[in-house]
Amino acid sequence: MPYFALMWSVKPGTEQAVKELFQNYGRPDPVVRDAGGNITGQLASTLVFMKGNVVVRVMEVEGDLAAVARHLQTQEAIQHLEANLDPYLEEPRDHSSPEAMARFFAQSAMELLVARKLGE
Image (cartoon, rainbow, N blue to C red; front, top):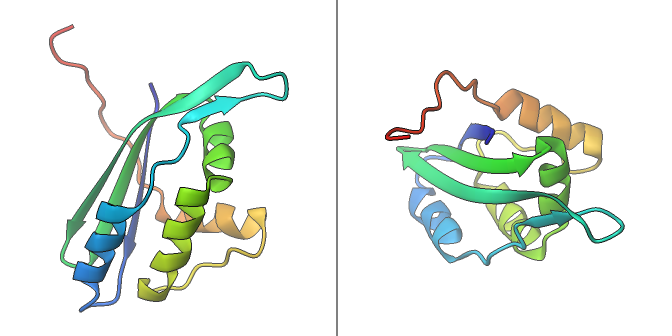
């Protein structure tokens, strides 16, 4: 399963508010379906870490990462979280187009060095 991680900074002093946003946001539908209703992927798990004002979000996905990302962008829980998170970001991000969001993801993406399932 592919993993995907994003890293960004929030304004110093907003860490508690950001922590509460992540602890309280709703659950998106993790299942991605095509136009025919067939399952084509899913968000298997998501983890969010914070140290100081640095946030790292790690997602484990099944299927095409781009398709899962597009699906998640349509989910109300994610849209609500992202809109409420924006005021706390050190560097504002542009939501005006898919290309603008792609730039944010490219700038924030972390390189996966190792992914191992132990005991298998």
